[in-house]
Length: 147
Image 1 (spheres, one colour):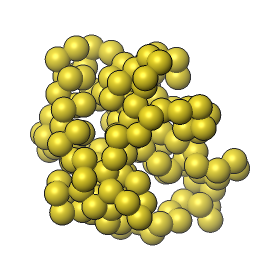
Image 2: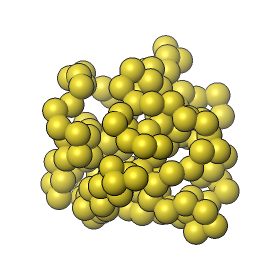
Image 3: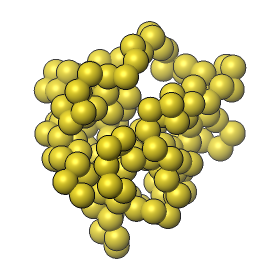
Image 4: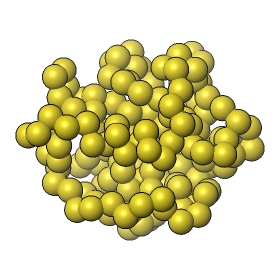
């Protein structure tokens, strides 16, 4: 459980970081993937692979689940209903689209929240409301955790 607490604390340390596409620098700028990468560096160390440049619509034209595939290479898949703070949440933002938004579960249960880099805003902690829950397509744990 210690690692999960560290992950949530690290994610909360990014709150307020401006949204900047492809960035991953706490306090300066990040996108949702950059947030996950930054938390990985803070909690686990060196990132497991280099991330190639990507456009805002990456993998949409090809209908390729690149983000899901990459997450499955480095994270531990969990059941969708197996909520633990520190989980990585993968969202499909529109029906028929590829899954391409990430967040970190912060609080679980009735007052569930998640932390994510929100386009045109910043890193925020949002309620994991019913509309957000419906968009979750995968849940992962960081390697080395107890969840």
